[in-house]
Image (cartoon, rainbow over all chains, first blue to last red; front, side, top):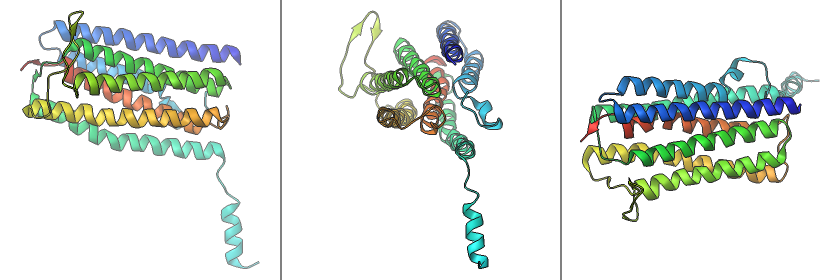
Length: 68
Length: 210
């Protein structure tokens, strides 16, 4: 039980680090490229996908009931 | 037994279990998110239709700071959900408070600093901490305040929901097996985060200065 809890906390922290890294890249791209529209949109899509998968657990929609 | 009574008994004999109810609730909430996409999508489209490849002068550093705060808040909300699922009440309650606090900081960052409702000025560490854009500033002001205003309203309602869940959690209302209220609030909070993921570059990073 404790191992599973620790793993879940670690997963959350990893997700946060990935989002932070993507946000930093996004900022860098935004302030350096002259027309960053496509790149920024792709980064935003990637960030949204990470949140929807890791934080919002979208897979629970088509899985038998569980809070894990 | 009359046919009506039998029908009544049958109907009440099939009360959905908590798990089945949660599954239905979850689908309903996701459908609500989908419906809200039309609202935020329209604002997002309005930004590109009216601003094109330009943007107003906004502090990009301030945008980065409030974005980071919202991301960290989302992490604490996730932590709260994991904690209640594992009956870790202390972490559950403290994480909820952290998420709510950071949500309030984000809200203040947008309303007090970016909207500059008090008309202040401060330039420190090379950052312009108070915004200059006003709602009356043509399409730039209109779109910016519509997008950030609608989003801030969702942040505010999310913070209220989190504090409501915290208060119920403090009274011992949730358990590892039954905590749909926590999950729903977390989902809503992350959804608000997802919207900002698209709004942030659209407002602060894309386009040449107008």
